Length: 99
Image (cartoon, rainbow, N blue to C red):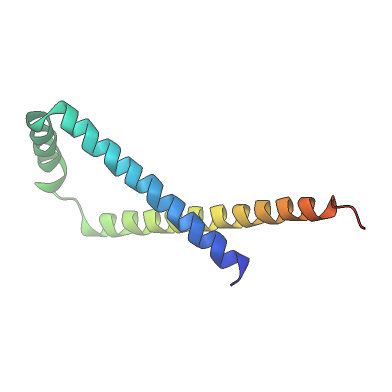
């Protein structure tokens, strides 16, 4: 298996774990604040964003920009992780004395 695939797989796992931690934090926050605070927040969110939706084209463009940005971030993180891994492994093998 190529090193690139392993790094991308580990990076995807790290992103998934960080997303899960964010969701877990949100659950704990609303659990601490209580049901009434959550329903009040969701009611305000509904009144602001869902009851009067904006233009569909705006949402499509915004979602496209968001997805492209997330993919670009993932690709840059994978690129730098691979470069760091290769530089660390090169440094480890070059300092080994020849016997």
